[in-house]
Length: 262
Image (cartoon, rainbow, N blue to C red; front, side, top):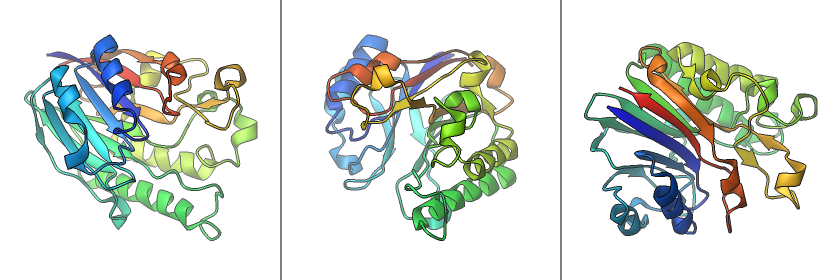
């Protein structure tokens, strides 16, 4: 089986239903993993997606916040969810394909603006979420698994527009990067995007605050596709669809793609 997978923080699936449909029509990935859906599952607008061939969905949602969904042309079954750090948020869902591959769709908390858990409880929640992810990977070693999502951390120096300028900015601080690296190491996860594109600046997010995001180009690579080591070599053709950031009423994130031969 060969399939192409995309991950995208859509920042409201109901508000941007048309953008999801456009991606489906123009790029036609077999599987699309969405984060920050901001919708109860029963209100996700599935009719248009089904008409475009995405007949299967596994999702977790809540009104106005968070939410993760896996939309697929390929049959898949619900494989549960984990409530990392016992936050009670819809931030993880898993689905299993007929070939036994499990896809984990994750939305790590952003962590607020101040990188100090004493001054900013949201930052502490983010670190606790990652610690819980690490322990899950350590005790439940993933196999034939793909983990994708908005992990809200740009780990490498070339994953941000300026390593020096962002060292004290949430999403690129050393403590966050270390926590993310521990999750990767605990599960022996392989960063598929960087396996395919090992060098150079690479971004998947540009702030809404920039008057001209494209000209300023102050991006960060917050969205990731990982694979367990037993299937990592089956992945290829990674790409990030930068032009999507310029679509009408866009998300501040763009889709990240990879293809797997399994």
